[in-house]
Image: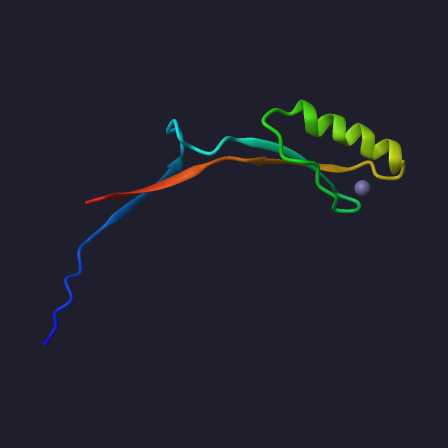
Length: 77
Ligand SMILES: [Zn+2]
């Protein structure tokens, strides 16, 4: 007979601030056609993408700012 040992474990979820964490990135999505800018390390690039996108598509006036942040989990034993 095999007995399973069930151990109480607590997991924590938190923003990843370790040196090897993935970078936070910024992107924009057009809310009209769904097109995304490239993800960039600062917000200037997605903003200039919006300016170009409006220029090409004068009826597209609404956008979504998309921020991707790294998170990590770790276990207390
Ligand atoms: Zn669009």
